[in-house]
Image (cartoon, rainbow, N blue to C red; front, side, top):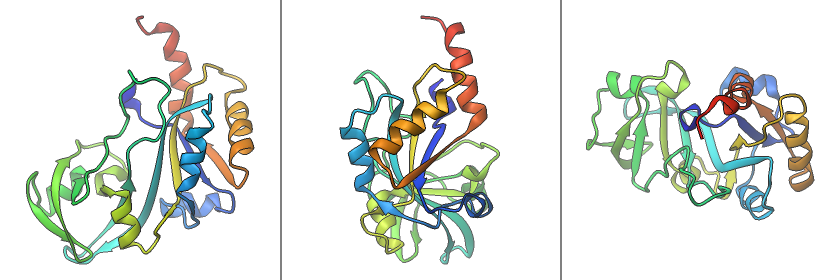
Length: 204
């Protein structure tokens, strides 16, 4: 089930969702500290809290338009035995989507520049058939510096950890609104619905 990834996205409250879906990233921003605040609250309805900064950018050195995703390590998991859903990106390195690596071409171990800064290719993700294939993942602090968004993020990814099938989303929204009133929450419905349905069938 870890391979299914995150299914909850927390956004700034003033983010227009139509623009989000059209552009593939949020244009509004919020303090990175929101993710820390959420983790310190010991929130119970979500897990695997990951602050992120995503933006569509020109990769001038390769004359390509890509999705740039800055991430740091997950700031909260409910059990030390749980594995992270997304590995931390080491400063000075990048992880490439399958299509980008294929078309540029770049391989693991290669060095390349992004917006004037040098990075080493640490990993190439397998083909996923979605926007991940044209995404570049780098360390969150470096993304903030490149995009001139120091201390800011535009999304907090998380995993729904409730087993409700009826009131799941309202429970999550209620808890997040209490902790972060200036945010809104959306879910990736197909993944969120599949999880609770799969749990009873999963081996223990």
